[in-house]
Image 1: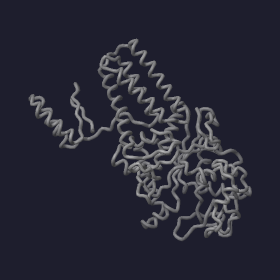
Image 2: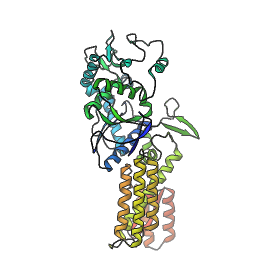
Image 3: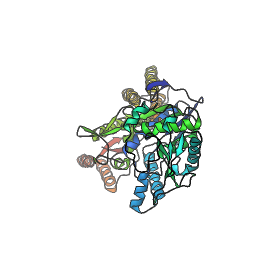
Image 4: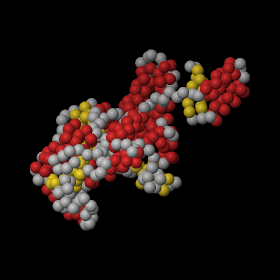
Length: 473
């Protein structure tokens, strides 16, 4: 299995620190509002990575945090006249609902920054003791970047080059910095902000130290994979490496994985998603228009390191693609129910050999840096094989084996193959019952009129031996 490692900028063979186990940390959202579809991409992508490792028999310890103390959370709390914990608690619960709707598995551990302050104070103290950090007069604690020779190795930036990128005029409160590139580990409280006691001042942690401490507590000093959006490479992940390796004296993460940005394609004009441009969508808003399985399918239809353009057209294409897979699974279920219990025919055995080749093709795609786009292409080939070779005359073994294959491969991608049970409203139920009565009375003209009326309401009917089946158009 090969993974593209941001650290080396190359695909590398995956070798776990401990055979059969994967220690994986994924940076989670800052919880001050509903999550947006940009947050959803790493959630879906790295959940799929986790699922594939589990499919291959690995035991995965998957840690993904919630940043529940932050300027944006504090600002939201001030606006609402509540404390910041009320805001973060509410949006953690809302985030979990959205994750469940996207079929993102709960992490092994979902740590919250505010519950890990003790570990942060301990690591900051250790960094000061080793000369990697210092406290300014106002109680702010800074990491001394020049004390860590490897600084810049993830983002491939040279510290002297970075120097020129930092503003020469120091912002208020940063007069105590020894060097403009030094970053905050602990900062003094401001009026009305939540704070914790520390040896340096009443205050709260910097963002970067939070993830270093949570990764260490729940995964250990060395981990296999650290992942997140590409916007986190610098400075967040760069600073995590500096803190963790300076404090622990050993390599932090073996592989660094980063997903590319999600852009918004509006009438052929591609823009980065932002609130200021008014092209900002939350997962909750998308759920009002689509089953969130469609969003998941859309996210996996491109390689995770490729920029992805979100558009209504692509969502419709994803909806149709997902529907095609689900229809194939339904057909296989029907065929299995009607099939004879005999063994596979020689012809079916040949088709099954082809199906196994497609499973191997799927696995090869996933083993090549988790190429979900090619994996989905292999699933569609399996759908095509199923549609063209399964009928009422098929054996139970053949129809059942194909169904099991499709469900298993889709399951690794977190794609649910069964349609949701949808409740018909009373008017539609009454119309279907009325049509059935018309058919019994051989009034086929009326039955056809009702079918057309239902079609106009977006309800498609199918008359089968088991009765009337319906689906939304």
